[in-house]
Amino acid sequence: MSGRLAFVESPVQLLNVLEWAHAQSPAAGAPTAPGGRGPDGPRPGVGPAPAPSVVPTTGGGEAAADLTLVVLSPTDPMSRGQLRRMAQLARDEGFTVRWQEARDGRGSLARTLRDLAPLLRAAERVIVGDPFSRYVQLLLTLFAPKQLTVVDDGTATMEYAAQLARGERLVRWHRRGSGRGPRELVLAPVSAAARRKLAPTRRRAVEIFTSLPVEPPPGTTVTANTFAWTRARFGPPRLTRGSDLVGTSLVETGVIDADRYTRAVADLAATHGATRYFAHRRESAEKLHRIAVETGLEIVRPDLPLELIARRGPIGRTVVSFPSTVVHTLPLALAGTGVKVAVCEIAPEWLKANASPRAQGFLAGVAGTAAFEVDRLTARATPTAERFEFG
Image 1 (cartoon, one colour):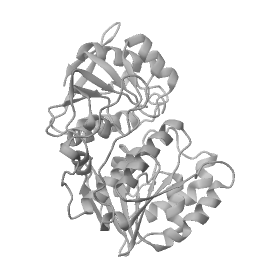
Image 2: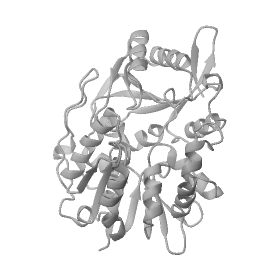
Image 3: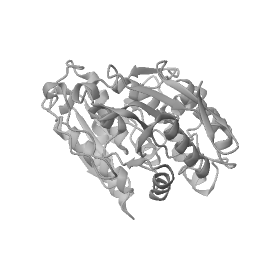
Image 4: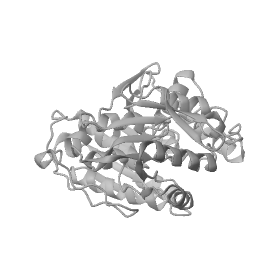
């Protein structure tokens, strides 16, 4: 069988590659964890949770033997830590995982291209998690695969599919300005070539493997990610009496005002009786410290993607999130557990003055297309705080 090669740059991408591989397996969906129960849940505080023990199920099988996962390692410590834990899960499942220090200084790009060239030339199918990644775009420009699969990396999949359908250049939704600065002009040829290599042709099939509501661009195939691997390997979780909040990096990406965000978190916690705040891996230590001091919430830094953390538990009976991928993925990962997911819409006044003009519409679309069983919370401004009502 022809070789398959996956490039991942985040823990969620790696999780979704495992889900894709599981969906290809003839035994997909068969629970194999002992007693149907995963390991204990995360410990309180900011420390890491215990390492999960997973029974290998695809090791030696066709799905694992034919797929190599290449981790293009990022530089931030939280992402690297989660990726190392996810890489071990993949190895436990029997997959070959190659850790590539792709960003460790001068010469790393040339070294990475040299190291990966033989694998790329031999691969019939390439799986990527972030079509907007400059690294991935460069790799695909040099070595165009015959078959391409794009798995979810947050809500970027929705924007990729929309831009592909409209024939637009690939630009992240939260990027401000014209996107024509000096760096963008230098990389413009790469981006233009990658746009062509990320689109279907008569010689190249493109699949989008997603848990998000995506309309198939012309010539593409959309396959549903139901999180069958996650449900088969972990849980069901123990439920706590209270609620949990899920953090977002919208402040760090320059979309939301920090003061508005902190106030919204405080009011959501008070409204829903939340005691824990699951931080996004890109949230800054300074912002998290402020949230802890001003709200009294316990800050939890997950060491794995939230879908796995929630599935193995413990988790609150209600999980409240701002618009993000988890309002689509958690209902799938937690199906049948009794956990209710709610999404808090982003009020226009929360946005920073220099936020991308597309930000409000995109975030509203993420919240508005959440699964029908997800509750929607609408912010109503008051003189001193935000008040949240069911929409």
